[in-house]
Length: 213
Image (cartoon, rainbow, N blue to C red; front, side, top):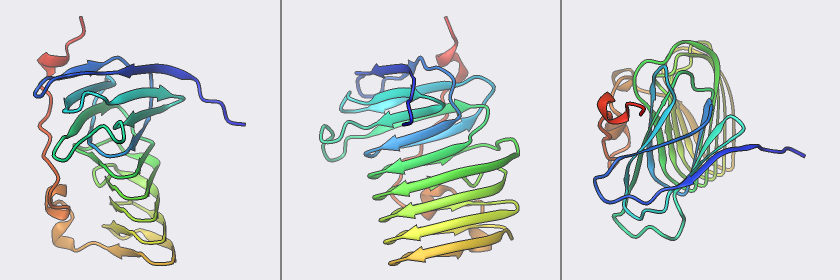
C-alpha cells in the first residue's frame, strides 16, 4: 500500500484579479485535476501563486513530492477560470486529468528524465524542459508537447496526441486510436497558444509581489 504524507493543504478564496501566494512544502512534480491553467517556471525558490480563481474554490496540497491542484469540479461555471503560476528549481513529472493545461515557460536546467501523463483530456507542454529521456502517456484524450534530447517512450490509448520535436529515439505504443507524431520544424518554438488556440496567456508574477515576509 502506498501512503502519501500530506505536508500542506489549503483552500483559497480570492476575488477576481487578486493574487495569492500559497505556502507549500518541497515538491518536484505538478498534478492538475478538473481544469485550469498552470504555468511552471524555473526558479531557485519554490513558489505557488494563484493569479485567478473566479469560483474561489481551488484546493492545493503537497503529497509526497507532488504539488496537487484540484479545480473544485462542479463549482466552476462557464467562462470562470483558474490560473496558477508555479516556480520550481527542477521538474520531474507532470500530470493532468479531466481537462486543464500545464505548460512550462523558461529554460529549465538539463535533467536525466521527465514523465508526463494526461488522462480524460487536457494538455501538457514541457518543450522547455531539457530532459534526456521523456516518458509520455495519453489515455482517453489529451495532448502532450515535448522535445526529448535522446529518447521518447510514448504511449497513447483510446485517443490522444503526443507531438515531439528533435531527433530522439522513439518507442511508441498506440491502442484504440491516437497518434505519436513529429512536430513541424517551424513550430518548435511557437507559443502554446498558437499550437492550442483558446488558451489564456498568463503573465509572469513580478518578484515584488511574492517577497517573503
